[in-house]
Structures are given as structure tokens and as C-alpha cells.
View 1 (cartoon, helix red, strand yellow):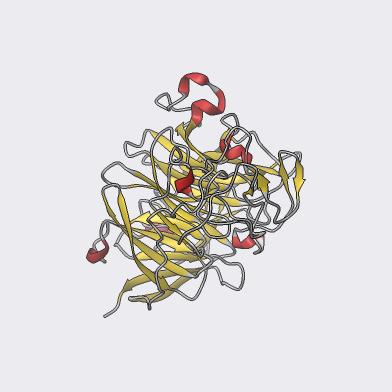
View 2 (cartoon, helix red, strand yellow):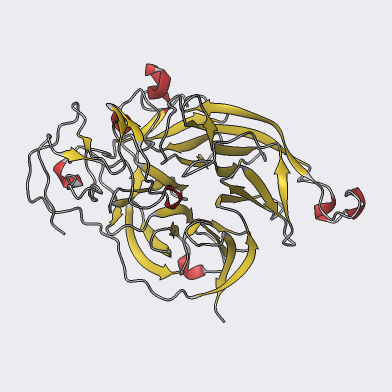
Length: 428
């Protein structure tokens, strides 16, 4: 695909998608640097980031779209939720599931589902609400969500201890349960917000994905640019960034610009749009995927201090039809390892290491919302290759590897999807 890079005066970016916000490509007015921007508006190139005047530059050599094929799995429905967003396994095989409306659920190994008490208030609606959940090595629960603010909302990160999950009737001690119940109630003890974006207002694209460093001593948090474009290139705003934080929400001392203080001290990388997948692999590399505008969804190899280009460059276009300069027009900005145009609208992502599908060990699995698929990407060091794009017939929000090596999927729960929890096992 050959597309045109334009002059710095060209309008780029997009406030949102033509799809509803529930589809994670929103359709509402958002606060831009010049005030509220109408849905679908283009955004001027930031003045401090001029685009090189190059035309007819070939696109990067990583377009990953494949024909959809029939899934080679047996698909079993094992639960149903209300607009689920993310899931994480506990050591005993129970599963935590966030629902965007503000409820945290636990699914026990026997299939029973119960609410977890103690979740703090969230600003639910559109792309916001209760978002990611992650379990640290010591059992601490981390949650990201959109917090109500004086105007709109802001992304926050909270942590808590999960009460009674290591003991009680759900591991067989029925005598410890309330009368008539077979599972001990669970709750979040002392939930505490440990990080706030500091930028609140309307808009979607929160990002909000949490992953722990391989040594378990720090965490990474993706922060979307909230449909506001230029903050992704503003080093003093936490929007459009991947942040590297201590387990109590402070800047990690080894960050590239730690000595600068403030948001700069927290920042690992910049220039991101809406990052929905973030995974460390055994060789220590960090991979991220994010939604582009109209096309241009990306899989990126994340390296500290790099700028990944949004909204200056993209392999997608504005929803108005105006082109955006492709990545090769700015070789100083990190280009994606793979990109999709048309969009797949990526959701969650995992690195597969299980025994149930030995042929897929060492692959990334990416949930596809817009194209209702599950995508497999093979890794070879710093290289990535799209291998499979299986049509699932429903919007896939998140993906997880179960303790037995099965692959579990969460439906989106919007646009006609039922919010089901699906278990994939080999056919035959």
C-alpha cells in the first residue's frame, strides 16, 4: 500500500470513530487543545512536531491483515457477564472479571459466580468504567478505572487486598460458609487509589492496561490519549503514554527521564493512541498493541524513551477521509512491528506458554473487537509475523491463558455480543 505523507499544515488525527463508544471507537465531542472538538474532527499537527515533506513514501513492511479462517477450537460457554472488560486468574484457579458498570466478579473453579464487595465508585458510560484487573505475585489486586471528576472523568490506578480467597468454603470447607451458601463472600480490603492521570474531562480511549515487570518489583500502565490528540506528544501530560511505576504508584527510579520529576519521571514511552494490550515475553521484551484511527491498528515493540508517533504519523487515516502521514515519513519516530488496515480493533493480548496448544507456544494472541476475530502472531526475537486470523463471529474483548493451558475469551457485551466467557480447547 502506497500512501501520501503531507505537509505540516495538513490536519491529522481523529477525535473518535464512526462507531459508538461502546465499540471502543467513540462518537462524542471531546476536549481538545482549542476547546471542545466535534465528533470526527481532524486535529492539527502539533506545532512542535513538524512532518517531513516527503511524498509517495511506501508504507512500513508489516501489514498484518489475513483472511479469516475457521477456528481450530472447540468453543464452550462457561459463564456470562454484563459488559466485561478484563479478567485475571487467582492462584487457586478462580477468575476475577471486571464489568464496566463498576462490578468486580469472581468465577470459582466450579463455575459459580459471585460479586466482590468494596469496589470504589467509577464513572461508567461509553468507553469508561471499571477496566483492567491484575494480580501481583503477593496476591495484591490492582484495578484501573475511570474515576468521576469535576468534569468528566480521569484514569486512576488502585490496589487492594482480596479478602478470604485463600481460605474458606470455596476450597471445600462448607462449614465456614454462610447458611445455604457454598462460597465464602469476597471483598476488597482497603482499596486505595495510588495513581491518577491528573487530566480529566470528557472522551474515551483510556487504555488502562496493567502488567507487571518480569521481576515483579514494578508495574506498567497504559494511558490512552482520551481522544485529545496532542497530549500524546506533551511530556507533561500522562495521556498517550506507557508509564512505569513502583508497586505503590510512584515513578520508577530507572525511567528514562526520572530526574525531571512529574509526569516525565513516570513515562516509559510516548505517542500512543489507545493501548489495549501490554505483555512481557520470556526474553524480556515488552510488546504493546493499540487501536489506530480509521485503520492503522498497531503491534509495537516497546523500548524505553521511544516516541511511537501518534498523532503525527499513523498507517490509518482520519475519519473525515483526510490522510495522515505514514510512519516512514518520520524515521525518528518508532514504527510498528505489525499494523492492520482495515482495523481489527484490538482488545486484550496474551503471550501463550501453555501445554494444551503446544503448536502455539511462543505466540501472541490478540482479541479482535471490530472484526470479531482471534489473531495469532508468532515472535522471533524483535520480529513479529501474523500467522492466523480466526473468525469468532462475536466481538472479543479479552483473552487469557488458564492454568491448564486452555485459552479463555471474554465477549465484549456490547453491539449484540452477550458478554459470554468462552473456553477454547483443541478439537478432537
